[in-house]
Length: 305
Image 1 (cartoon, rainbow, N blue to C red):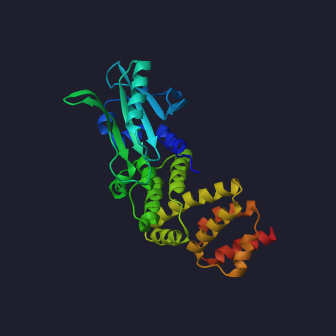
Image 2: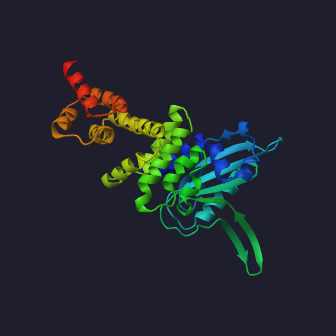
Image 3: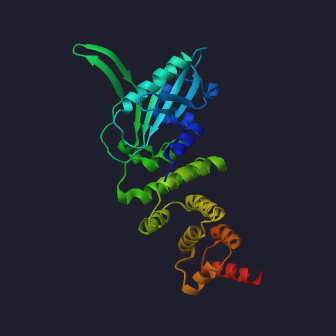
């Protein structure tokens, strides 16, 4: 099972400023980026349900050019639930009560279905008299077109395009574009792995899609191909480290076929017989292969070493 809450919380914590810049430039103009404080778990007791609930992400920020502070509350919702608008109101009310600070509430809807527009307010009213009208901002990923974010050099765009609206036949193309953007952002290794891992989690391709991915990869600039393949190779290495030998082997074979063409049966058998350490070495060495003779030379070297 995918731990959606953990993945989104990690992404939005590391790239909080980039998230705000991408979706809420008005909010970006309000907060002082160097003042951010990520608050510890905010637990609320639901007396009716008899359980404790936790707000996903709460950030304390200072208003730009002022000494006053406010809170930003971001709640990720990975499935459609009735009464979510009331939950957003309740969280904001509790946060406001506890900290005596204004709360800027944001809901991120990350489910695939349904695609109808989700509510962005909670209202209490009588005929002719509105007691309360609570509004919150919404990012509903399944109603956003991934193409609109292709030219935005933002790590959050690179990650969240993987959850935006796309057809089944576009999945391979979207994955390539996500990784292409990651490669151009020049992030440190840890941040690059965070985003590329997020993309790989939500865009796991089947064999047919992998073939389409390879075809799409062949159409981009050679330097970009190299950068994308390095990211994919890092997945292989992590797969080996985690003991997923078969998955890693499958990825290496696909990458080799992209590099040197179809592998005949004897060559496949040689690769399948490699140790985990040798597979890890091959996942790096294949980046320099230009033809089948390079692969054969490397395999021969393994036999003589």
